[in-house]
Image (tube, rainbow, N blue to C red; front, side):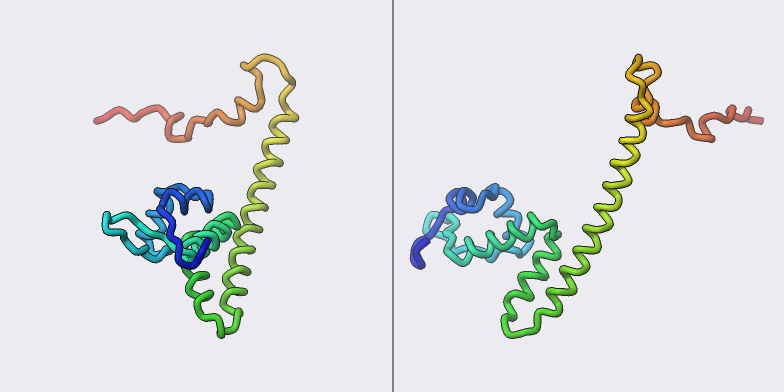
Amino acid sequence: MDQGSELSIGRLASATGTKVETIRYYERIGLMPAPRRSAGNYRCYQAVHLDRLAFIRRARELGFSTAEVKELLGLAERRDNSCADVDRLVERHIEIIEEKIAALKRLRDELQSTLSACKGGRIAECRVIQALTPRPSRRARRPARALA
């Protein structure tokens, strides 16, 4: 993109693989700076918007929340500072990813165990369906007390 050329919101969306409504949302929450408006009140995006949106998209693909992306963007603007704050943020994010991986492994193991217990018979005896069916709570099993 040339320094002087501008993009409509549709072209910015196409160039970055981002939905138009997502771009508007990012503007509303302050992740994207407001673009210049044309005489007809259309948004006019520049190279800085394209670069920023590409940064946001990549950070979101890596699983960072919008709050974390906002923090990363703020840190990125202080180019002469130490990257220790960025490192801490990424380390926190990795810990969260590790927790999610552990939870997904537990989920996979439970599903594999349930599946291996299934004998391939009729639905009435299906271990998978049984495992997914909620058991009655203790409260539901107790007979209702008569009102005095």
